[in-house]
Length: 425
Image 1 (cartoon, one colour):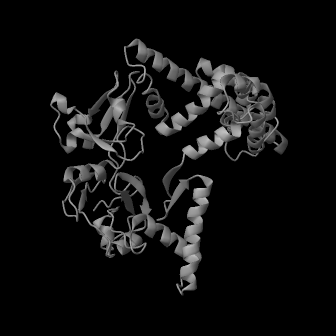
Image 2 (spheres, helix red, strand yellow):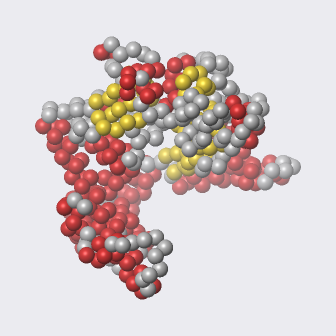
Image 3 (tube, helix red, strand yellow):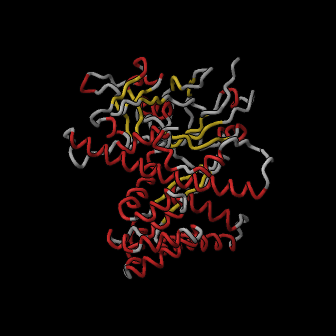
């Protein structure tokens, strides 16, 4: 264990971890409760230490970029990506973490100290920082001690309400500020459930969310009263799809949605699961082989022949047959890469990049191309970053090297998805 970690782990935590074995029933229940508490404190301490290290690195990167002559508005932009690749998490995860860590370090010194001592958990600390985001820096510091005392006594759920009341008392306009910020952050995002279904989550102003739900409910009940045999729930879901897509029925989807299935499964020789691919790429989940065969016979199916390596499943070619031609190479790369090729990124592909820049003579072909997310593309052009195709072909992998000299490799996923077992015959 490296020396800098030692101060944040007390003796009780080390004793709790020492000799730990899953399923060990040697210690008494009372002793095990003590171990659970010690481990929980240790988790809080390490999470706080991680927050401090990440925020410190972000500041160091920004200062170094400015010292190297980078424009102030671009300085430090690559820090979150460097940390994300090192931790093997998404860039959004790091940004979310820093959005909590930086104000805690700057304006909540008592709270930070309690976290480093293991007295306050990260969920509780997040609720405090979130509640105080509408306050000015001096206001946050003024109530830091009070909120820290509450955080040491209350559950995270209780603390969320307590902190909101304390902030409202400190700034009567805070509730209005918070509501305006929340309403401006409206968004829609898909969640793939992995069982052939998906969830579309819309965060809207409250009155818009209620109005949308009531409109679906009212129309569904009207159709039910007119003799439609579907349940209210089924009618609301079908109406939702029909109104968003403009299609006559929810099942008549004339949009291009890729369902990638092995020929052997399509013919019924085996049951390798298929994969759902969106218009902009991305692995949108698993479809059972039987369901994929059913979709293959539907009138809305739009088929391409996708040829993959029989052993590792990597997509190697694609034919041009489709209803609307919009660039075979672009579509091939969308299917091949799936998501952004920046290592450990799972964002949707927004644009395609020449690995060897076009201005430097790089060809416009699959070997020299990588799909990138909107926020990933600018990172590769920052000073100190290097991107190269392994053995000159992006199909073999793309290696990203950060300004600190750390390298990470991204390889195209198997076309049927990671975890599938290709036939070897």
